Length: 171
Image (cartoon, rainbow, N blue to C red; front, side, top):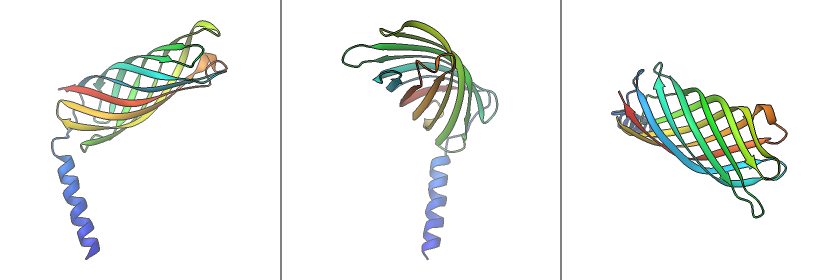
């Protein structure tokens, strides 16, 4: 009896969450995000960050992404800033209203810190998250991302950001 109840409940939830959540290979998505950012080097600096992004669906699962990010890091004695312009791909399992995703991006990182001045570096970003497709035109979600500044690993061994994101979808 318990297995039957679980099976019926799982089927009902699947149908409820699947309604209206279809993906489109040529979908255009415009959105943004914001949240916590951590820049770790000789001294860890917590702060906030935000970004804007544009995406184009290449296939049902793969999306081409272009984004710009800004973060400000505020310890008591100094502050640092990071700007990143990134492009890459995002893989998503877009069959239900909850859409898990994984992204890989590369691009330029522009940093400013009182300890070492300004620098421009090349980096790689790896992210995961989940979006909730409110309807065909709008989604909200959570993300987490690790940035590896490849050309300056000694100064930036870790740059992490996480938070909330949103997107408007156009067919």
